[in-house]
Image 1 (cartoon, rainbow, N blue to C red):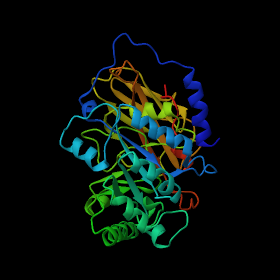
Image 2: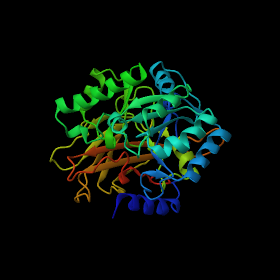
Image 3: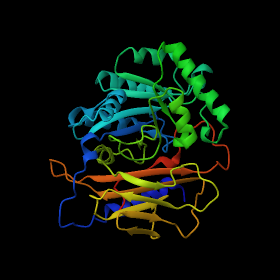
Image 4: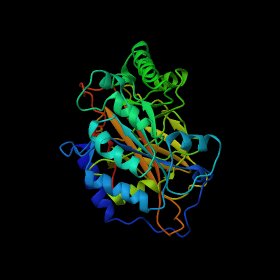
Length: 371
C-alpha cells in the first residue's frame, strides 16, 4: 500500500483513539522556550498531483488562519538567530518555506503572502531556472519577490537529484554551482540549503558547512529549538491530504522531543537490518509511541529512558524509512493539547530513477499525532 494511503488510514484510526489520561500534567522542557516549527509547501493548485500539492482553497485557509490566529511568523534567518542566541520565542512561532519555486506557487501563493506581509523562504534549483523549465518560475520573478523584503531566497543543489548518493566531487560541484548562480543573480550569498528528497548524509552535512551555508533543512517532521543540529532541521510538509486547518494547527503547536545517543547517526544506511536507538530527556516520563513507515512498532522497547526499535519483519520499503515518534506535551495557555514530535528519515540508494520531483508521496504525516 502506498505510504500516503497508510498514513491517511492511520490518521482516521487515531482520531477515534484518544490519548491515555495521565495523572500529572506533561512537563515543560528548557527546549520549549526557543522552539519553532518550519512548514514546507511546494505546488499550489496543481490538484492532479495531490501528494505534492496544496489546493488553492487549503492555502487560502492557511493564510486566513495565520492572519486571524495567534501566530508569530518569522523569516527563517530571524528564527535561526533566535535559537543560536538563546532567545525565547512565543508559542506558535512558525516559519513558512517553499521548495522548488514552482510557477503554481509563485503565481498564486506568493502574491497572497506578500499582500498579507507574511514572510517566507524559497528554496530553488538554479538549473531549472537556467533551462527555463515551464513548471518553474524565472529569475526575474524571484528577484521581484526578493525586493519586497519579506522573502528569503535559499538554494537546493543546482541539480535536483539524490545528491547523498553522488560521489563527493559531483555533489560539491552541484552545491557550488547553485551558490555561484545565486551570487551572480542576486549579488549576495545563499545562506540556507534544502536537501533534495530530504535525503542527507554526514558527508553531505559537512559539505554544506564547509561550503558556507549556515543551516540546512530536510523533509522529516519535527520541531526546531536551541541546541538542534542546524544542518538537519525538520519541517512539516503541507500537502493536499495533510493540509487541513486541524493539521496546520497541530503542527504549529508541536513541541520538541529532544533525544541523545542516537544510533545510527548516519541517515544513509548500508545493508544492515534497520534498527534505531536513542535516549529521552530525564524529564520525559510519559509513554512514547513510535511508527516506522506508518506501522506502529510492536518491536520497540523502553529501558528507562532508552528507546530501542528493532523491527522483526522486513519493511515494505527499504529505500526510504521514515520513523516518527510522538509523546503527549504540555497544554497551551488556552488549555489546548500539544504533542512532542520526533521525525527521522533514513534512506538507502534509490532502486530506480525518481525524476526531478521536489516533493514525494512519502512526505505525508497523519492528521492526528501517532499514539
